[in-house]
Length: 342
Ligand code: AFP
Image (cartoon, rainbow, N blue to C red; front, side, top):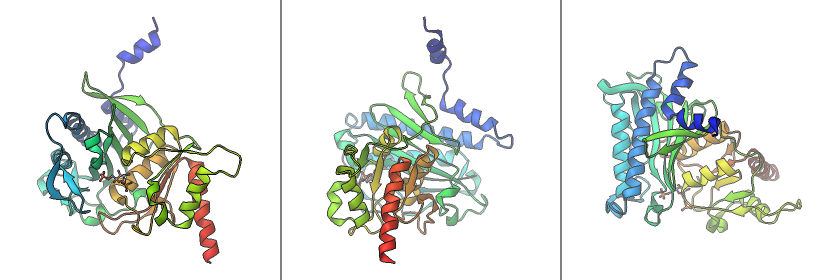
């Protein structure tokens, strides 16, 4: 009998236990973050179940409303948003919420307010649901300056001030990846006990990867550094093998693969979208935070992604994130382009 394996099977590190362990390193902590996280986890379990049942429950199809980006909302987007908003408010630990699905930030009523601000995309990649592709929830957590008087500036902070970020991927397994500023850990939902169990401790993104991930259909709109970079991926001049292209079109799934296997995920600026497509608060920041915490980098084409200071809750930004060395390469191409301009 393999006693070590047996011990691991019976000594389960659940996500709550993990966060409580982290909390014990901060004697000043009151457990508020653990309570907040428990409510996020509840939302993830609910959405996971809803995504799996979507076809059966006839939840697929258009919800009849349009979100702030003018995209048709699926019923599951609406449902997921409602679940997260209600779970976050009922935690009693939040004061402002910014969701991809709500045009305006939500200010929690004073009697239910706590110190945290949560930015989130309840169901990212939802245009992929009809064909069963992995989708996910992305979230980031900040602290409000004054919970009794929260202002929009509390969610328009630089990504550097994020206290925690994560995503839950609803795929072949339900996987929650979390960082509270002390590395990145991955938890997989064990449906038999309804708990997220630590399955990917201390995730480190490989220093260099063999995969690039982008919507290459946009090539004709790209700027020169991006075009040059992708050309180098396909026709490397240093004798190395070309990189493989993998693109799902669902950020959580593309970033999850990048985190585990290495490489680069890019959604650059282009002539159609000069500010890129992906949203700073609830796509770019949480994923950049996770990538940096895992030893990788995140760059906008101009600066470190986490240094951005959003002006509006639905601001967009170009993004290049992934393995440290791969991001160094794109950074040097943008630096060279700047030098020729000067
Ligand atoms: P949806 O939520 O509308 O499916 O958009 C997904 C997304 O915001 C992000 O998850 C993808 O990385 C990106 O858009 C894909 O964009 P393209 O379809 O332009 O490649």
